[in-house]
Image (tube, rainbow, N blue to C red; front, top):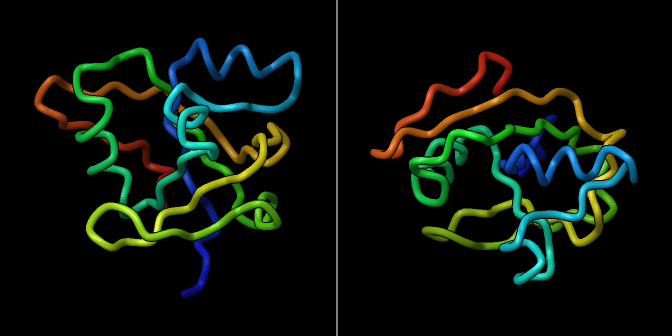
Length: 117
């Protein structure tokens, strides 16, 4: 498998903004619980948003350069046998390519930003 250029983290706006002074994103509650930061590929994003973020509107989508976090990134089997990227370290904000606000309707539908690739 060739790693994609970008992987994506979904966060609440407040959790992401709290990382700004430190320069590193520690994660969301589920990340702390599981011991790593959950990411999705572009192809996994829609289902992740629908499954875990339905009805939430104060979210930010964070596009992270895979190469910048590769040393601490593991591709592990998860939902449906698919390999998901998991980061076993804080995410350095310097690895962020871009961010975009995102909202998920109650039915799980969501319009992804154009930059998702």
